[in-house]
Length: 103
Image 1: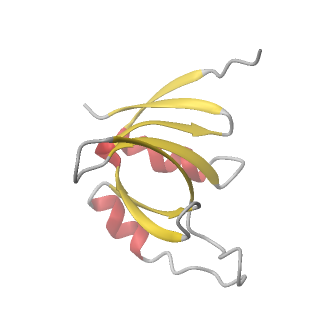
Image 2: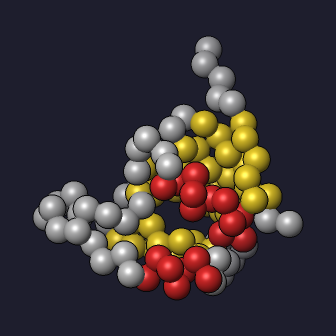
């Protein structure tokens, strides 16, 4: 049985970990702000739109960083979402579990 190594990152280190990953896809476990439920969903970072080959406008990313948000593509819903970095509990990036310390 294969076990994943666990790393702990501060919320402000999450974006660097995602950008430096070998694959643009990752799982995020986070608290949904509207009802407090815990969600575990598959996302991709913005970049090239898989369907059209068009490069997605990433100018919003710098503004997101100031607000501790991250714009992601929801693979299951086929739409963009914004996640609050302070609400992320853990990620799975390149088959490695990453716990997020929001303190």
